Amino acid sequence: MEKRLIKKDALAGIAKKMAGDFLVWAPVKREDNVLFEPLGSEEPFFSYLNSKNAPKNVFFPHTETMMKFTRTPKGMVFSSEVNASGETVLFGVRPCDAHSFALLDKLFDQEKYKDAYYVAKRQNTTVIAIACVKPPYASCFCTSVDGEPAGQEGSGQGSN
Image: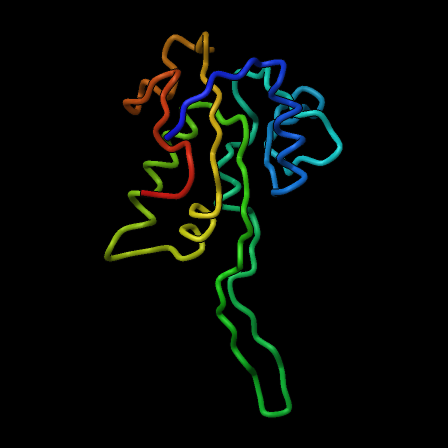
């Protein structure tokens, strides 16, 4: 994996430029909250400690079409196609959240059991993490799960 050091002032421009080619999820400020949302015309907000909603919602949305039944003259027709997920970028994730993706990969992308919905989204998503220069809490989550404030596990593209 290629490593690059990018100045914080350039991040918003990079995220917006990527949004021209990909679906980019980034932290945005909504009143007193920071939420990960698809990037539109708003400015991404990278000066946050923690977000109100976890970026894992990109892989586990609150609602999602998983199967479809259609009534036809001959009866009901079932379709169980996995949603075709296009290339997505999850930009500005904290290392603790990126580390959690590696843990989720171990659960949902096993040889014996694969969650096709999760695996498709994960393989089509590039995760770009932003290190915590000063962790917001003495007992931050990343260190609780053997991660670190500048960890890279779970970032990058795809799973396993």
